[in-house]
Length: 330
Ligand code: COI
Image (tube, rainbow, N blue to C red; front, side, top):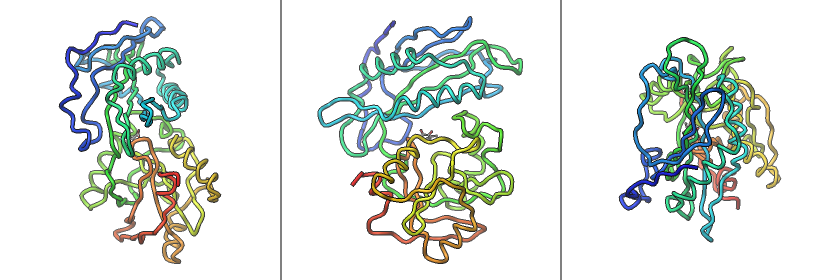
């Protein structure tokens, strides 16, 4: 693999204690290109701007997908990737849905491993520290013909991260007007446009004082789906309930892990639809003990209140919440 090293590392200028999510990137990136029906082996180059045609299809039709993965450093200085095979599988599942050619496993992992070897100093030890890895692919072919492209670029960039929202709990709004995803749509894929489509309704929710939206089903806005940057778990009495994954809900890798870990802790977990009516009646009866989100960036994020039809519902703090037990594994 061709490797061009950066002339000078930026690491000395980084305040690892005060990292804003997704703003600072490591010294190198991995790039592979697709043309004439195949991916190149790829190369490593210094992180930096690059040239791309204004007619590249991604700018016009949004043919792009991405992943979010994490790498940790153990006390013995080894790098540990969190379930990378799952991200790789989902990457190609998302690509398939967006008519993007699948990436070869060797290209993906040779690139990732080489990149981590070069930028390993950027992965810090200790609670809450991780390297967030963002593999992505986009249609680079210069053409505004509205069909799938013949040329693509795959890249991996990495940023050191702490938790997405710091140690804060968040409040969310249950959305009844806008939809994130519909049956038969692309909601299960990590398609770039899924995220862009959330920005406007989320902006409106932020003006009302919420940090995120709980998306409901697009048919009648009665069942809870996910929160866009995370899957959701509801603790009703001592049971955890999470919506089943579907074509409109992302198959979260952290979600899957939480379900497995909870069951190992003998916590009962149900994967089934949960309606707003059930949520409200559980709240009124005092049975709704916790809500939390799960995702690569947020890890496990407690939610302290939710808003529905102009009313806020506050969930009192618990002494030993499941969210903390599952995050800390103790
Ligand atoms: C992740 O957790 O990796 C996500 O995809 C959410 C991201 C948009 C911050």
